[in-house]
Image (cartoon, rainbow, N blue to C red; front, side):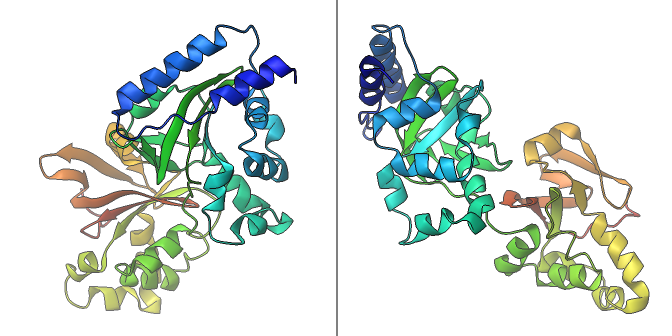
Length: 315
């Protein structure tokens, strides 16, 4: 890489704090600064070469190499990369980076790195227009425009223009969900009956696999609304087909977030019949159940919490 290009890239990564300024003014200033800088030169680099030239992303570069993502991010794109600095990686618990760089943890490393990438070219203005963003690993991350944050990380430099996209620098590594749908439900502590029912119905493997699913998950309080003795009856071996049918009526193929579900107005379940989805003054309703918690990511899908067990016979 020539000296002029290196100078451009390095200058573009100098700190631009978002603190003590509104997101709009910060992003606008950063864009203008970089635009005037880049206008002085004819050359730009791709995302990888720009990051390498900056000198502050050695850990990120090593991780991308181990994950075999270098060539992808040198490709046509466009991509938006939220790039953690070396200092950001240093904030992780001791030994984390070394562990992630081991061959046996490659899939986990890929998942984390692609959680920092969007398959689109989004300048800071477009980023901050959103309350969440769909990342390359399939999961979503929350955006706080007021605080200038993506997930837990603060955006400290914006709008570094590259030939195949844009880089925004962040001060922390943002971590995707690391548990399966079943593990997420079990760790929440409020889905003990659902977990027991899933096990009894032989659906543990299905909800722990790689295929993305969307689960409308009734809480223990939701199951408690059923007539007395219903759960105990369903858990009996002779009723497991009925139990399985009910549980599959709560599951939809693919990762369906709440906004997409509302727009779709219905969803075909793995049980074979459709759920009705509507948004009214009561909130978001799945048949007669209210969504009380939405868009909880898992490694293999997304969970929406509901306050009532929905039954296939319901209209």
